Amino acid sequence: MRVLILGGTTEASELARALADDRRFDAVLSLAGRTRAPAQSPIPSRTGGFGGVEGLVAYLRAERVDALIDATHPFAAQISRHAVAAGEMARVPALALRRPPWQPVEGDRWTVVADMPAAARALGRSPRRVFLTIGQKDLAVFAAAPWHHYLVRSVDPHDPAALPPGAKAITARGPFEEGAERRLLEAHRIDVLVTKNSGGTATAAKLAAARALHLPVVMAARPAAPPAETVADAQAALDWLVRLHGAMSAARRGV
Image: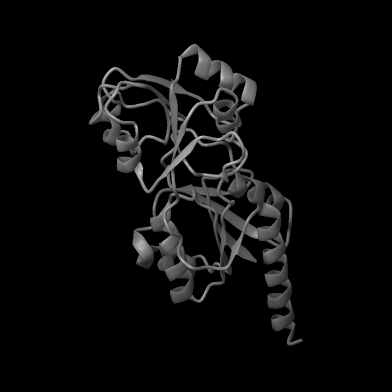
């Protein structure tokens, strides 16, 4: 059974590893190409967009894809919408693999905002030492608030022109450990953490570190996801594929 995984997340990689040696499936992992040096895939992969919904439909048909898994980042709202629409148009069963969002626990000091401009406004007018873990495409918003001191972390090296004035940039790939995150916050005398509610375990340690240090967190809420059949982890996505494979095999045998 031919499977297309729209990836870029820990869960997509976990699913790819689960399918790599399973002879029932012929899977391809598709990456958007935003990360310059993605982790090596255990299954064949492709990089780059499809050219909108029509391009994705054309790919599904040309490659005779039997199942589509949207395991993209929770903030990649556009490709998720495209996946739902393309699956319907190409009549390919589609599943969304969306890890649950983080939830505040006792001791957390969260300010939940709708988007990055709201996050920048939430920092206020008084200078603060800010740890930004939001990826690279939203950094320009914070350039408009140059009175803060920013520590910016992402997987890839930053474009200096995209950084807020005077920002210090570091590169690192998760998973991260709470003790190391706490030491990082203390070493840079961070006053507030700004992040997106990505969910998952790979980067959750920064929240535990902020909690331990009694630091406030400005948390950007997820964009609305399109309605779709949804599971929360790679194992549930694999179970869905196994059931679909069984149903397709039975149909082919005329059972």
